[in-house]
Image (cartoon, rainbow, N blue to C red; front, side, top):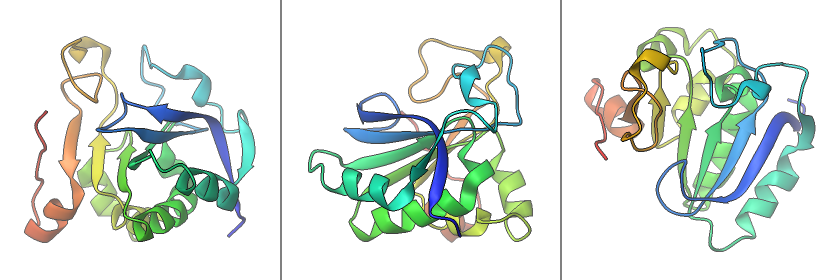
Length: 169
């Protein structure tokens, strides 16, 4: 695996993409093209910039106030092998790991063995916020998601119980 990742940007200390102070990595590239997407500049697979993965990991781990990381986008599942590598390194240090995706949890389960990195990423995150943003289901009162169809899923419990376990905020 090439040790670079294409990112649209980084939020170095965020309180809005999961609980606590988090580092947020915005993946470059998305196939979903959700109407009224919050991050339309992240859709182009050739936009953003290539970043060294190990430098990103080390910089994050050297910031002691960071308690978690979030993979957002774009869609991080389009570079799942690279985000899985990052997730494994962050997990070793006890960070809480969230990932957003326009794919549903069910779709990921059905395709995890045929898509590069999907199984590894799924097994190394704590929480998945799944589903495309749907403008008609947008609600200002939602925490950590933009539309009511999106779910905040406890991945570890969902895998263990073999059914989706939703986290309510």
